[in-house]
Every structure is written in C-alpha cells, then in structure tokens.
Amino acid sequence: MATKMAITLHVNGTEHEVRVEPRRTLSDALRTDCGLTGTNVGCEHGVCGACTVLMDGVPVRSCLIFAVQAQGHELRTVEGLASDGALHPLQQAFIDNHALQCGFCTSGFLMLSAGTLEQQPDIDDEALREVLSSNLCRCTGYQNILRAVRQVRDAGKEAAR
Amino acid sequence: MKPPAFAYHDPGTVDEACRLMSTLDNARALAGGQSMMPMLNMRFVLPDHVVDLGRIASLAAIEEGQEALRIGAMVRQRDLEHSPVVARRCPLLVDAIQWVGHRQTRNRGTIGGSLCQLDPAAELPAVCAALDATLTVQSARGTRSMPFAEFPAGYMTPSLEPDELLTAIELPDWPQGHGHGFVEFARRHGDYAIVLAAALLAVDAGGRITRVSVTLGGIGPAPVRVRAVEQALVGQVAAAGLFREAAEACRGLEAMEDVHAPASYRQQLAVVMARRALDAALASLAPSRGTAH
Image 1: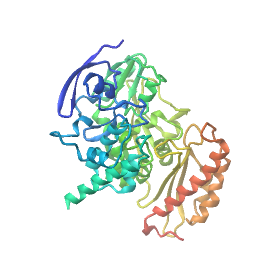
Image 2: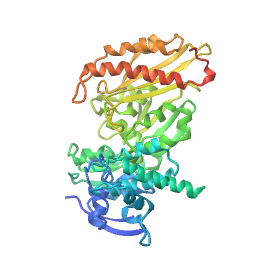
Image 3: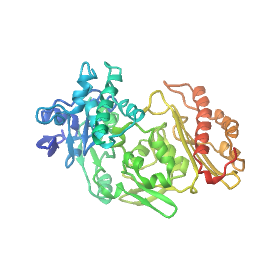
Image 4: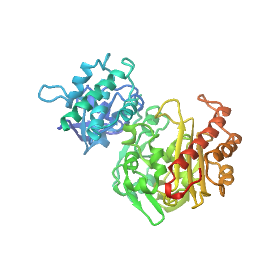
C-alpha cells in the first residue's frame, strides 16, 4: 500500500487539509475526505460527467483527476453555487423548468453549465447543445436542462444590456 | 472501480522526469489523464510509480518556429482550440480539436497524451500524420527526433522505450491560405470515430493542386496517408467532382473490423470521409487562391 500524502484542497473558498493515497481520485476525496457529497460519482471512467466540478473556473471530470493533482488549484463544487441562502440562478432555473428528476446527474450538469456560462455568457444554442451532450441524464430527455440553461443565459444577456 | 495503488511523483523539470523514468521500476508517465485514469480504473495498466508531467511548465508552451509550430507535449487540448497562433498557422489542428472528446476532457487532455495513447481512431495522431509532424523524444540517455510516420509501433503502442518521454511535436507550415478539412463519422459526438479523414490542399494561381495530403483514421491500427489519392490529385484543377472519383481509391484499403463496424463498412466510410474532407479543404481555401469552380 502506497503511503498517504498530506495535501491541501481549496474548495469553495475553504481549505481542506486531507491525507490521501495518491490513487485517490478527486471525486472520492471531495466526497470522503472533504465531506462534500454533492458531487456524485457515476461511471468512474469519464463518460457520464456526473462528477463534473470547476477547477480554476473550467469544468473538469473529477473522477479523471487525482486529488494530489488538484493541489494549488481553486475548486468549486455544487455546494459553492448557492450564496447567503439564495439558490444560484441555474439551480432555480433547473427547478422552474423541471430539469431534474432523480437528481443524480444534476450537480454535474449545474457545474458544467455554470463553468460554461462564465466562460461564454453568450454561447449560442447549438454550442450549448453540444456542451450539454457531454453529460448523461437518463430522466429528463435533456430538453428541460437545455431550457433551464438557456433561460439563465438569456437573463444574463438581458442584465448586461 | 478504483485505480491500483502506486507512488506519485510530480517533477518540475523534464530532466527530473527523465531521471525518474530511468530509475524507477514499472513507472508510467501521466499527462492529462483522460485516457490513463480509465485504464488505471479498469486495471489495464498497473504501474508501481506514476510520474505526473503536469507541473513541468516547459512542456506546456506553444512556440513559433521559422517553418513549423512547436507544441509542448503537455499543451492542453483546450489551449490548442483557443490559440490564435494555432488558428493562424495550423488551422487543421483547430478543425480536429472540435471532435476530441468533450469540453471537460479537453480542459485536461493534452496533445502528447493523445499521441502516446495512440487510439486508432483518435484525431490528433491523424493530424500529425496529415502534416508529417516531427516528434521530439527525451530520456536520461539523450534526445532524439523522429517523423510521426515512425511513431506508431502497433495497435495503441508508440515506439517509445519505457524510459522515454514525448516532449514536443513540430507541425510544419503549409502555404498561407491553404485549404484544410477534418471530418469524422461516430455514433455519438465526442466518441472515437469509426472513420475520420483529414485533408490539406494547396493550389497555384490557376487553381491547380500543387500539394495535397489525405489521411484516414479508424481504418487500421495507425492513421493512414492515402498516397494513391494524393498522387491522383496533384496537378489537377481543384473542383468538387474531381474528389468524388479520386476518393474511390480509399475503397481498396485494408480495413479493420470490430464490434462497431465490419471492414466493408469502414471502406465505404473511407471513401465518403475522404471526399468530404477534401470538399471541406476546397471550401476553406482563401479566395485569393483563385480556385476554379
């Protein structure tokens, strides 16, 4: 058994000092060592996108990164979306548009959407469809997810006007 | 499904990484991890040591040479996708990157990692074949370079010694305003292609083809340059009808067979993809090149 390494993970503005084996994936470290179980683990080989988090502001699959690699990077998980008791606009839009049913894929979709809209606030529909196609949802048929993200994008454009 | 236990190393320089690769038993280099992590999880690879190249800044640079673009092995696919330098000097690479995985995987995946993984239907090896890329390989024993054509040793196997690291990829320039096209057929976007094709096209003032490159992926264990098509096209006036006939030569290629498609289906796709890639290359030629239609 490889020895554990002491690392610091910066998650949602908080430092987590954890001791992990090098083989510990970031997704498992977030859930097990940091206690942040909002990030879900689905396929564990980079297909489903359920474990998507933001690393330095861009969406990544946390099952395809070792926790030891995430040192020195800013991580954001679904727990970091709401602020002061108010849901993030994407979270509210997912509720309003019935963009979730069982909820397993939701945190991944939220982080993917949050990172995408932050990078590309005016992303067009076609590009957005392609981005959202990278995560798997077996309940909603995607249309409601697309509708929710489009609503937040359009509200952002309206506000910027 | 968890990775096997290993010791982790994150050297800060190439020299240090080479030293680790030459002294540690059963060591594997880790680039972006987007294929390596699934392989670890599925226990297809069982390294005792993982040498993470992610902290070596010198491997993550895009440099403009006189006649080629020099890309560090650890340049992320996302950075290639958004680099103005790459868009200007190697537009085929930008075309191809759109087909590589998804946004999240491109944020982590690297060009060097994709080349060393050497999936038969991967996009970046096909780009290197299309452009006659030169690869730089380094170990504690020294540095060598090799043409990409010599890089594939077999199915998903690069011709690298266990202590060697791919450090840089040189993509030679094509003439300003050249045509470029990249197309693929996959069951779902983001999947590896069943068959893909890359085409490059340069024409003279009269629209006559002076240079052409046609590459297919997903046909055999490594990307295939279709010389028969290239030779048939040089000297001809570039026009869409020409490509339909020339691409027929792809039907005679030996093609692999797997759960996704039989060989005959791939041969048919090869013809269609080669033609579409050439059509896209023709359409992208700068107007000043005066193509005949």
